[in-house]
Amino acid sequence: MTHPSPIAPTAKADILAQALPYIRKFHGKTLVIKYGGNAMTDPALQKAFAEDVVLLKLVGMNPVVVHGGGPQIETALKRLGKKGEFIQGMRVTDAETMEVVEWVLAGEVQQDIVGLINQAGGKAVGLTGRDGGLIRARKLKLADADDPSREHDIGQVGDIVAIDPSVVRALQDDQFIPVVSPIGFGEANESYNINADVVAGRIAIALQAEKLLMLTNIAGVLDKSGQLMPDLTAKRIDELFADGTLSGGMLPKISGALDAARSGVNSVHIIDGRVPHALLLEILTDQAFGTMIRSH
Ligand code: ADP
Ligand code: MG
Image (cartoon, rainbow, N blue to C red; front, side, top):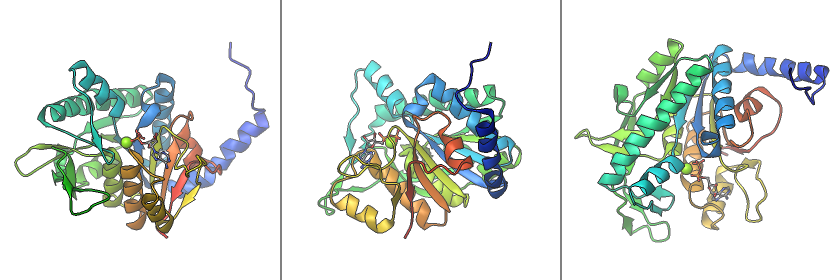
């Protein structure tokens, strides 16, 4: 027996009809989706996410998934008796932590996502930055936020040198859905841990994506009193950095988002991944949702 739906049939039809202009507008366009936060750990949300990605592909868009994995890395480190440490939102990555990061992200998290998308009827392919030379990196020099003349050594955390998106293009042209782990490689083939938001921003730029959507574990960017800010300009973001409204994981997220908005990605949104079908809501309806990041 099916459950009686709380939505009247005419309202349902209305919602579906609303999607048409968006399907037309985004047909053939690339959408880069940063998958992180709770949407990645709750089984019902995972399933809804995978279905959304497949639906977008089937109506002719090109979703590219870049995933994070903070909670999963944390669990694995804990099992080894190690504790994660963060400086300015970046994970301090010694050699042993890098090994854990690489096997958790590329081995476990990425393959779980690939499996979920395939179960939902899509054809996903997992990549790290090494595959097809996608993400070249070098050691990040992290200047102190308060005293830029000071530098933090955070180990094998990478700074992106170049993105070669040809492998992603080849896959998407062949109807595959690329799922990218945020691991870069250096000149000596060494691995680098890179914040997934930063990777998503740079891949969106390299692919000249139409949209960058960052799913997270909060309603969007909040002001000092905890209110959602639906719209942010570069100037306002500078103020929020300066007055300490942004902290932790929101720092690289806003940087990645702003970078993309400034470099030609048409629409950049930080959205609530705790809402089922968050992707469909943002892409295919008139509903305002999360925080939009504008370059001016
Ligand atoms: P993700 O998995 O989405 O990358 P992060 O934990 O890295 O999640 O980043 C999101 C977190 O950033 C939020 O859960 C929140 O704790 C933190 N944060 C810091 N400042 C803000 C802010 N002004 N608005 C919203 N979240 C913020
Ligand atoms: Mg994060």
